[in-house]
Image 1: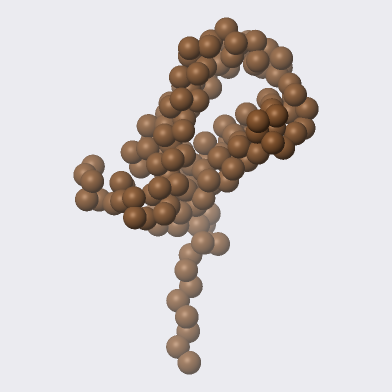
Image 2 (image 1 turned 120 degrees about the vertical axis):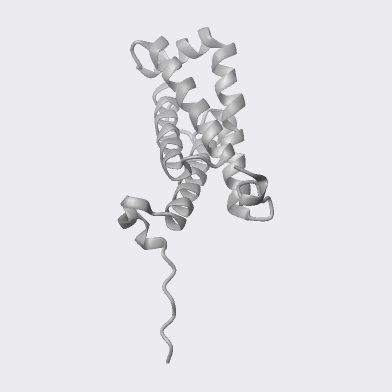
Amino acid sequence: MSVSDGRFDVTNPIVVVRLTTGLFYFPHAISKIVGFAGAVGFFTKAGFHPPEAFVVLSVTMELICAVGLTFGVFTKYLGVVSAGLMVVAAYAIVAVYGLGWFWAGHGIEYLVFWGVASLAVALDAWNKNPGIFGLFAWPLRKVKPVAA
């Protein structure tokens, strides 16, 4: 992996979104590690049992997404995983605080944005390299215009 392969080309908007999506996971995961007892309390209120196991699983998945998305490794898969993590996080917020939109008031606005950004990164990566799951990329494929 080299800088010249385009993974860190900050003139490419989707690379900036991918980097931001990945880098935001580091403080998100670290806050759960540093505040483990508080995270366990929150996961308990959200209905995740055993909460300690779910906190560890959450931190593990967040760090995997952080590294993978930041370095552009398994992007098409980790973008989907990241979006899934945001769905679960939004569920937990709603379970504990009720349905609210504004992030500063315990709403899901930030999580929805992060999830949509994650899906955009995944879909872009899938479109560039559909692999054996090429059928999932068809809505994004650019159709060549038919010459008149």
